[in-house]
Image (spheres, each protein chain N blue to C red):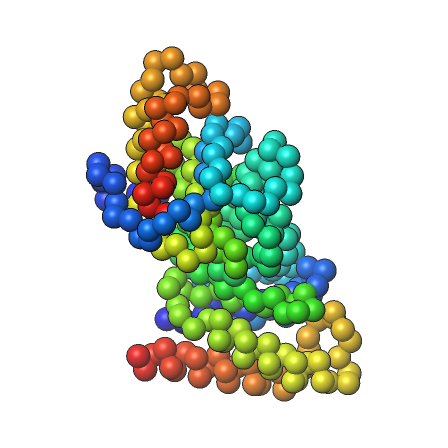
Length: 169
Length: 141
């Protein structure tokens, strides 16, 4: 199973698809469902408190992934619905769109999930998510003071991420 | 290659009332199709809760690695969704046409009980015509 479609992760940021400040929020989860990072830029509506919101988001992604793995029309061998799957196993999804927002999703081989919520008419953000993952590797994983699994507090990462997201959406 | 893989119709409480497969590998059995339908119903509802701005009506398009799922929810809460090849266009229109067929041949059928599985011959016939026409139009391009 290939994660990045065979292509190398590009070292330079991909070209912006739309300009303007359309991004709503970003989530980073680890493979245990711990929210490592949550940033919001433009979110007028809060239906739940932060912790519940993160849990619901992780649950939605988890269930949608088992749904897409079960629905996959191109393979006959699909296993049972709801059986936990390793990252990269089974048919996953990369985005969904509602009338008010678009959610782009990427899962890395180590189970890190990066979620970007933007305006519904944003284009394909798969390359941008890969770039955000690159930032994560450079600024968080290569930081010797960072303990894996703890919330990200690196200011450098957060400011770079803010800047990058503002430039793409 | 089929343009659309399958069609589901679920009632307002998440029960599967219609399922038709148009040639996906390994047809889903009845239990699985019921489970998938009710799972979709809940995911659709949760996506509304997570919206950053008000007025969200749930997922319209889900882009998976090997398929696209287009969903249309009618005003009464009945959801229609098709699983198609990635990047298939005009699926919103197809869903609206299917909704029209549903109102014409299912809801106007005096023997049809609301929220129950659809067993209407005329609906089946017209549906397969529409899907066939859609497939031919796609091949023509």
